[in-house]
Length: 296
Ligand SMILES: C[S@@+](CC[C@H](N)C(=O)[O-])C[C@H]1O[C@@H](n2cnc3c(N)ncnc32)[C@H](O)[C@@H]1O
Image 1: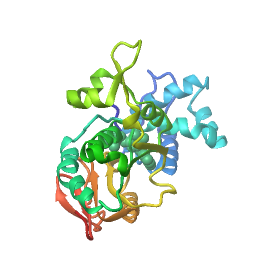
Image 2 (image 1 turned 60 degrees about the vertical axis):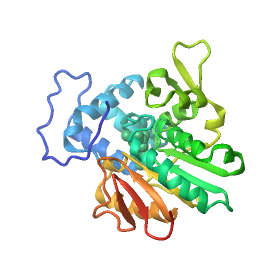
Image 3 (image 1 turned 30 degrees about the vertical axis):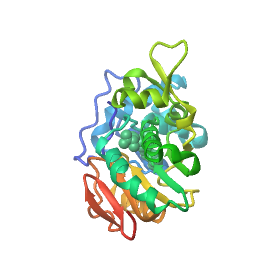
Image 4 (image 1 turned 45 degrees about the vertical axis):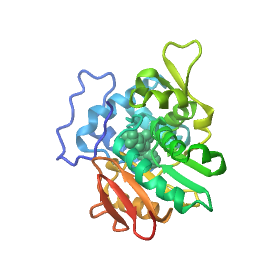
C-alpha cells in the first residue's frame, strides 16, 4: 500500500545517504514538497522522506539524470514537461470497488430512490467522483446508478463525472481493464452484467460500454480552476482531503458546496471529517453529509 500522510511530527535528523543510489537530503525533500504543494495542494509530513525518495528515484533514473539537484533543476526550468510525471509519481492511488460499502448502500437504498422520485420530471442526475483514482469508485457509482434506474435508465440524463489530478490513473480508469481479483467486491450478477472477460488474457475483465458510457473521465486539480457548471446531486470526495491542510480543505468544501444541488449528498473518507472545516453540511452519520437546504 502506498501512503503519504499529513503528519506534523517534529523534524527528524537528516537521513543517512550511505545506502542510497542518489544523494537525498532535507534540502531536496523540502524543495520537492514545496513544489508538490504548489502543484496539487498536497502536504507531506516531515517523516515521509524515504517514501518520497523511493517514489522519485525511479523518475530520476529513467530520465538518466545524475542526481536530485539535476532533477530539481529540470522541474524548475521545464515545469510543464515534468509536472504531470512528478505529480503521478507522488500521489497515493489506493482504491477498490465498493470501498466503504455502506456509502453505496446508502446511495442505493435511501438517496437515489428519493432523487429519482423528486426528479421524475427533469430526469437528470449528476454524481461527481472527485478523486476517482483508477476508476473503481466511479464504476461502482455507475453500477449503483444503473441498478437504481433499472429499465428507466435510457430515458434519463444520468451521468457520473470522474476526475483526478493524476493522468496515469485516469488512463487506467478510462480503459476499464482490471485483474479478476480486483472484482472481488462485486456480486456475481454485477460482474456478469457489467464486465466481459478480456479475450486472450488470463483473468482480466473489461468494463462493458453500457457502464462506461455513464461516466465522463476528466483531469481536474481539486485546488485549481474548475470548468464545471455544478448541479451535482451527489459528490464522492473520499480519501483525498487527508492529504490537504485545514485551510485547503475549508476552501475545497466551500467550493464543492457551491457545485451541489440543495439537499445534495456528500460522502467523504472514513478518516476524514468536516468538523471545523465546513458548516454547510449536516452530518447524517458514517461520513455521509447533506448540504443544508431542501432535498431527499
Ligand atoms: C487514495 S486515492 C482515493 C480514491 C477514491 N476516492 C477512494 O476513496 O477509493 C486519492 C486520489 O486523490 C488524487 N488527488 C490527490 N490530490 C489531488 C488534487 N489536488 N486534485 C485531484 N485529485 C487529487 C490522487 O491522484 C489519488 O488518485
